[in-house]
Every structure is written in C-alpha cells, then in structure tokens.
Length: 92
Image 1 (cartoon, rainbow, N blue to C red):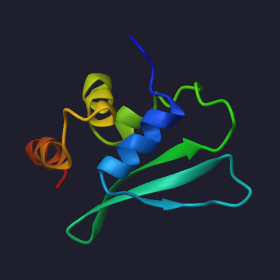
Image 2 (image 1 turned 120 degrees about the vertical axis):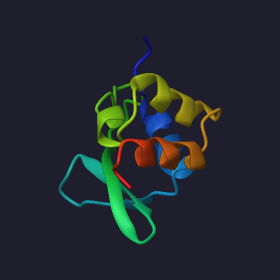
Image 3 (image 1 turned 180 degrees about the vertical axis):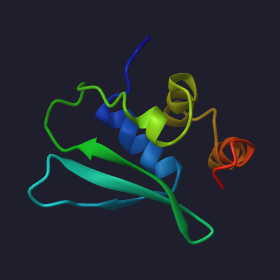
Image 4 (image 1 turned 135 degrees about the vertical axis):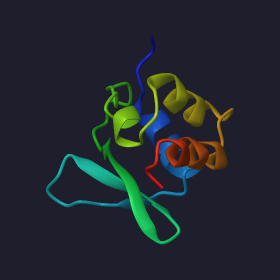
C-alpha cells in the first residue's frame, strides 16, 4: 500500500476546497475543510522539502479509508462523494 505523499495531501486539500493556513513556528500548515459554514475536518501538510514523507494520518482526520483518501488525491473521488461519506457516518 502506497502512503500519502505531500503532493497527494496538497491535492486532497485542493479537491476538498480546504483553506490552508500557514502556521509559523510549526512544521505543518493546516488544511481546514468547511461544509455549510462549519469546520468538519482538518489535517496537517508538512512543509519540509522531502515530498515523499508520509501523510498517512490524513485518512483518519478526514474520516475516510486510506484507499478513499488516495482516490481523492488521484481524482476518481469528488468532494460531493466525500460529503456523502461524512453524511452517512453522521459527521455532517
């Protein structure tokens, strides 16, 4: 199973329409995801230059499986599907 890279984390943030907040003094930026005006999830994106460092914590922070997180990064899964998953789980 391939891990989630920085590039994939950035792709997930874009796909979910996240607001990325720079956090001075921290090793991570924060991607905050809102739905209907309420923050429903957030995850960190490492700022380091090693693009292949794992971001394997992201799936649990956005309430999906590792496979679904990779599908978000690689385009087959859309934001609408992600919201449907969260709705089914009672998160939104």
